[in-house]
Length: 217
Image 1: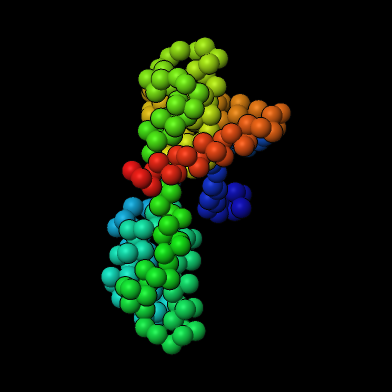
Image 2: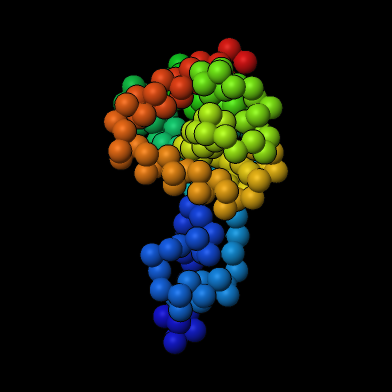
């Protein structure tokens, strides 16, 4: 493909410079290409995607339904398409037109799940700092004592797992650190999870608490 001057697109969850399992030659070639940090679509983009999908597939779904889906599902395009597919299948099955009320009823479970996307870094830092009995300021600060470093790494790991923030954005939220620090912290927790089975249970409980906090606001 390269020799034939073809365009190639690759996706990954980290910058090309951090792909350690690639040869230096291949990594260097990737770095010479255009590197773009892709973020989840905003409301306007989500609405436009839904409108286009409905028009392309000739679905009888009114604009107010686009609006409620776009406002409640902010994760990714696949989830938007899944919501449309569910509504379309329901309409075909029962022979009803899709109204706003029908959409809200049929997608209420989907909307409930995607509200977890409202988790903020503040929710994460507060929950983890309270659990480990350290201050939120220390979590963002420069202290390198083990009692601070471990919960800070866990908070970064959780943030990577349950939010849409890039590692660069997470670094800024955690006291202006760079993305390599965030990646290193997540790798340390990944390694620790293999050695300590109880850590996974601890992290899952923290995530549950964080999501409950996000729903309450």
